[in-house]
Image (cartoon, rainbow, N blue to C red):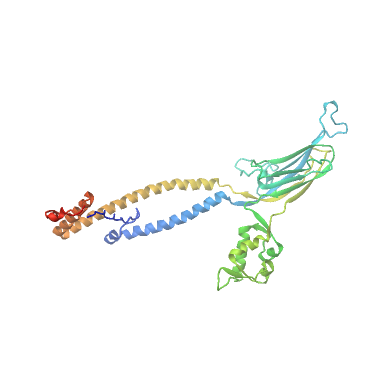
Length: 379
């Protein structure tokens, strides 16, 4: 006879903060606690969504439109008729400088207006607002290096401004092209699509939202298949389709989006008169990220408060465990009080069976061992 171990019984594990149904029947007031648990689950879900929103905001900070005033000017030195290397005098040279500042409320320059920096917002440096800056010099005067390029992808260090310095005594016009760094990225909308949506320049999510609003306002969504929408005459001119799937809209719109044009500036390199030369400034609309220091501190404070909540959760879990233990004791005593003799017999039989299983001798039978046939059995 072969002995096989009995299969282990799986215990039904309940959540640490959940009161058993039997206790709920005995104590009606526990229904209030159950409703509080459900409310806590809803609050936790809302907090998790907010945490995700905060994390996304930290990755992509909220921006506000501000005016960046760009200054372009040049300085020069040793620009006299008898200048040169004669008598140890340096060669004539000039420097083209490009810099800028964010204007405060009311369009005031913080430096020119004498605004104190104390307590004022700290803005990113000048180079943070541009992806690429290209300066074109006169190729006739500077044939070797007449194109100077700064690319943000190659330089991670932010700069307060840029300077191009060369030797020379000839005046000419320098061309400057500024590629603005929009955060999040923005696109130019084709003329045909802009007429339909009323958007010429915006981010991709906003352009997609404008299309959804257009479909919803004109009730173009297909009643038979909600994943499709019908194209009216205006959309047919843009997409060339009578019916389109929502999942294909993003791909179709991409054909009507293009990178924004660079800002084109020209500056006359002057080598006579007052230095610095050039009083021209240009106002450019840029996206300035909002400061998240206060929000982050509030978020960290709330995270510290979560430690107190965790401590209370631990107290609740301990209390629920005690409730489980008291419920077992109550069931034991209640069964004994109702039928003491039957209860004791069942308990002894159950414990005896458990002891045999633990000892590995579940087939032990004293009556069978008295018979000789028991010992003649094969192993």
